[in-house]
Image 1: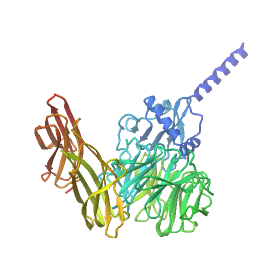
Image 2: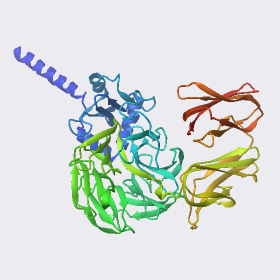
Image 3: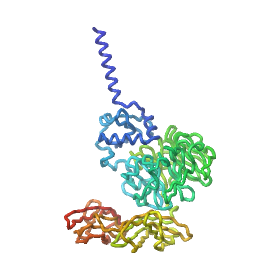
Length: 590
C-alpha cells in the first residue's frame, strides 16, 4: 500500500514539474536574441501573434527593464527580458506573457502595441526641451517605433525622438539612414525590403527601390558610392544574397551589383563604408571586415576576427569604428590599416556607432542610445532608454548644393502653382521647371533664378498656365554655376473639378509671418478655418464665409503669435448638407 501511495506521489510530482515547464519557453535567451538579430521576420511573427492576442510587443519599465516580443513557441509569444540595459546578454531571461504580466507592475511602464496608442510615450527619452535643428546632426534609427531620431552632432544629446515618425507602412525594421545630395533621406528596411525616401522635414516621398526580393531582400546598411550619384546596399537574403547592390540615387533604377554574390569574404554583409582608395564591408556571418577596391574587387581582410559586426563607420583621423553585437561585444576602434587601437565593452550588444564632434562616441544597442567617453569608454549619458536602437549616420548639408525643404504642386482653377523652399544654397544658378504627362519624359517649361550662396531660407513659386484636365508631373532641375545639376523628387497635379473636400498643407511651412492655406470643395459650402495652439486654444480665425465649389486659397498672417507649432482646422458644410473637417500642422518661426 505504501509503495502504491509513493508511486502516485512520484507521478503527481512529475506531472507538476512537466506542467510548470510548459509555462517557460524552451529556447534560451542568447539563442533567441541572436536568431532574432539574424532574421527579423522572427520578431515580426511574434508581433503579429501579440496583436492577435491583444498583447503588447514592447515594454520599458521605469526601473530599467526592457521586454520585447522576440519569437513564437507553441503558438505563444516569447518575450525577451533584459535586466541590464548596457549589457543585454547579462542576466537576460525569456518568458511567456503570463509570467510577464504576473511578475511586473506595468502601470507606469511605456507599453507599445501594434494597433493601440503607446502608454507613457515619453518615458525613457532624456530631454526636456526640443533643440533647434542645425546644419549638421546625427540621425539614428530605432525599430521599436520604426522611427528616425536626431541627436546633437557635438555632444549626442537628443534633439527629436521622431524626426521621421513611426507609423509609415513602408518601414518595419529600419536599419540605416542616409542623407543624399538631392537633399533627401534614404532609409533601408530589413522587413519591407525597401529603400524608402523622405524629405529633410521627415515627410515620406516615395519608395526609391523595393518590391523586388530578387534584388533587395533582407536589406541592411546603405552608403553613397564616391561621386554621390549612386547608393549601395548590403543584401543578406533571397537570390541576391551576399551581394552589395547598386541603385541610381535619383531615379532609383537598379544598376546591378557593386559586389557580386559569393565574392570572397562576402558572407552575411551588414554594412559598407567607402574610403579614398577602398571600401570596407562588415560580415555578420564571416565575422570579419573585408577590403574591396572602388570597383568592388576583393583586396583582403581588414579585420580578421570580430564577432557579428553590424555598423562600421568613419572615426577621427581616418580611424574606423565598428559595433560588435555578439561576445566579445562592444565598440572597436582601428587605425587606417586595421590595427586595433581600442576596445570598449562598458556597453555591449552593439548595433550602431558614430564618433561625435567632441570625440566621444554615440552608440546604440537593442535597449537604447548611449554616449561613451572616447578615452575610457565610460557611459557619459543615456539620451534614449527602452528602444531598439539601430545604425547612426551624420546629416551633413555640405554634400548638398541646395537643400530643398519643400516642393508642392497645387491646382488653382485652370492652372498649376508650384511652390518650393530651400534652407541653404551653394552656388545655385537657379531651377529649370520640367513637366511631364506620363512621369517619364520631361520637358523644360521655365526657369527661376536662384540666390547663389546663402544660408537663409528662400521660397520660390512658378505657375503653369498651360494645362487642361488631366494628370501632370513636375520636377525641378537645380543647376549650379559650374553647370552641374541635380533633380528634385517628382510632384503630381490632377487638373479636374474637385470631387471631394480636401485641405492642403500650408505654404510656406515653416513660415514667418504669413502663409497660404489651400482647400477644395466639390459643392458650394460654408467654410471656417481656425488656428489652435498646442493646448487646443483657438488663437485665430482665418476665414468664415461661403465659398463656391472649386479650389481656393486664403492667406493667414501670424504676426501677433509667438513662434511654435500650431494646428489649422477646416470645417465645411456643403449645400447638400454633407460636412467635412480636417486638421493639419503648421510651424511659425520668427
